[in-house]
Image (cartoon, rainbow over all chains, first blue to last red; front, side, top):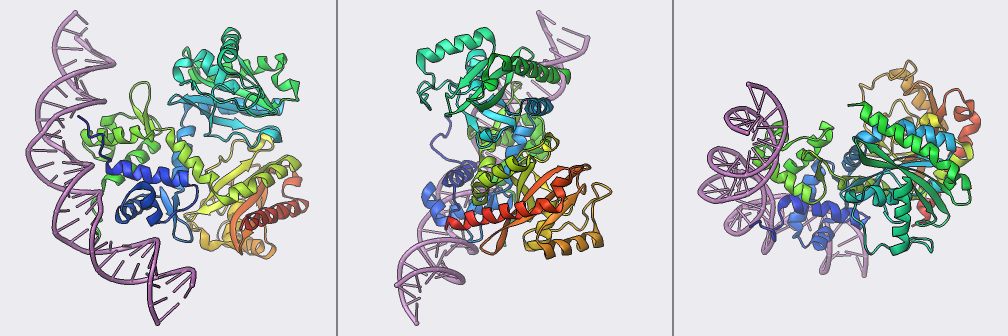
Amino acid sequence: MEHRNRVGTVEKAVDVLQYLHEAGVPRGVTAIGRGLGLPKATAHRLLKTLGRRGLVERDDAGRYRPGIALVALGLGVIEREPVVAAARPVLEAEAERIGETIFLAGARGGRLFVLDKCEGSSFLRAAPRIGSEVPLHATAVGKVYLALAADQVQRDEAAPAYTDRTLLADALDDDLARVAERGWAQNREEWIPGLAGLAAPVYARGRVVASIAASGAAARAEVWGPDAIEPLIRAAREIGARLEGTT
Amino acid sequence: MEHRNRVGTVEKAVDVLQYLHEAGVPRGVTAIGRGLGLPKATAHRLLKTLGRRGLVERDDAGRYRPGIALVALGLGVIEREPVVAAARPVLEAEAERIGETIFLAGARGGRLFVLDKCEGSSFLRAAPRIGSEVPLHATAVGKVYLALAADQVQRDEAAPAYTDRTLLADALDDDLARVAERGWAQNREEWIPGLAGLAAPVYARGRVVASIAASGAAARAEVWGPDAIEPLIRAAREIGARLEGTT
DNA sequence: TTGCGATGTTCCATTATATGAAACGCTGGT
DNA sequence: ACCAGCGTTTCATATAATGGAACATCGCAA
């Protein structure tokens, strides 16, 4: 039987990183030890080791915070996705053409993350960042996954209503059926008030590998109107072709 | 004396993460063990532990790659910088106003990283990403640091010439003297051909805490001309004031 | 279809590493 | 000047990690 109740040294070190990440502000040795139920000496030694490798660093007051080496590691996870490299020029061309923010999202570990984006209008600059998780039921890219690649994501049965337009239960199921039928999804202020968008799946080797979305102000019909989806579907197909072309 | 020749368990785990990051493609247990000089059993156990916490994951073929949890950690390093939060609306307003990409860069561990950016013209979408390191001697933000906050960065004596306009040795020192005198820096295709920009320091409590830059095509004099720097200096001052205002 | 080589996974006796109580040095506040 | 609380270090001891060996699985060639 596995030693499930024992926490190994590596897991303690990861706990330290998670603790500092969640704390959001630099913390001292004593606070970290208390927060994790570890003696000061143990916390100190783990911090020293993580610090030697740049995963933790000290601020001017000597307190500990997550280190800059994590940025390279995190960025590397995104950049080494083949679909990100394949999609980049297509996202740029599309953002330039329509003047709105174009996102690429993909499923990892059952959740949906922004893999890349090219910004358009100022409305969308603040949400969301590359690397952020986005909700499945309240975004166009999320509904693409729920309808067309449900095996790759874990649907949240207790999904919240973000706005009074968020679709839940039967209304969501009805909308997902429409997404499955026509092969693309629409978001009309279901996640963030005033925000609308369209998304199409990116296929490679017969599987959904990402979803591309255009988002902008709900007041602009051009963002979510029927004329907007064809170019997005073409862009998605081009990304898929570029992915398969590298075989 | 410290046991310097021994590599602890946490450091082996970090070695595994670095190895996968640098490999750039998923690797198997045997290859990881060989690459790091570890027995397969040791490599396997470390991968299992890292995998339980999402820092490593397996692809469809069962090979190991850096995990999505690193993205959140890396993103968190950037997002929790007070200067990033303070600067965000200022960067957005400035990018909207001039239509060019606005960057925020800051020094960490002696090197310079892009902490945030708001994209403008299509020219600059591809370079560089948030979280990327940028060279000191060949960028406007880098020259701001070398001239006005040299204690926070480690100047590379063997800095390369990226283009035929890259300033080195005495020419760079002369330019840094001008930057110190007037309080801002200019890049005229010194890093990437065709790319120009201006940068100003962000001060808080008497220290340089970041540098803000506007960048765009070298063909557009509006990007690097004398009329462009005043609004950037105002933007830098506003960020500094917002930082100090939270005290 | 079968056999083989290479990979991934597990076990457990042994060892090396980590532990953490205690002591010490330092800092900031009163 | 003093004290409480923090950060850092030591080292006897405990515990977790180690890694050789064995086993299970997989992919490929004949």
